[in-house]
Image 1 (cartoon, rainbow, N blue to C red):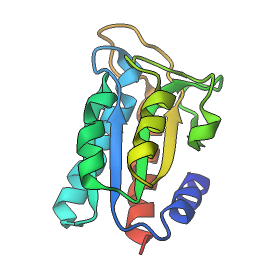
Image 2: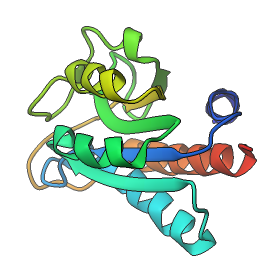
Image 3: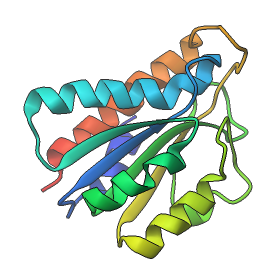
Length: 166
């Protein structure tokens, strides 16, 4: 986890406005990881009244939030989602947009790369994608133990990086 905090802290070093976008489906077990992490971040950020951070819950159609993201004009966008990254359940990887070709994000209607390319045409922001390896995508199940731990680590890492950014 310390590595993720360090990577995010470096990426957010000069952040002025940060948007965190949680993606996933609460109906499909571990696919809810991005949403749950984003909600956790949202609760902590809203309590602190940190003005430069906005959290959006993109669910299975994050492309529907491109208008809102453009209005917010973030300097940094962090997307959190369950992704098949060919790792062990609960493993977490921080990606740059150019690294996500061929990675299967779980339940989107539009490929993540298309949404990111669209946004980059309208706003100049640094984009980071946090992928969490799911264990199960079955309908109706809760988060697996491994992914629940990963969600807490990701939430803590993002919050830690936000609070150390200037």
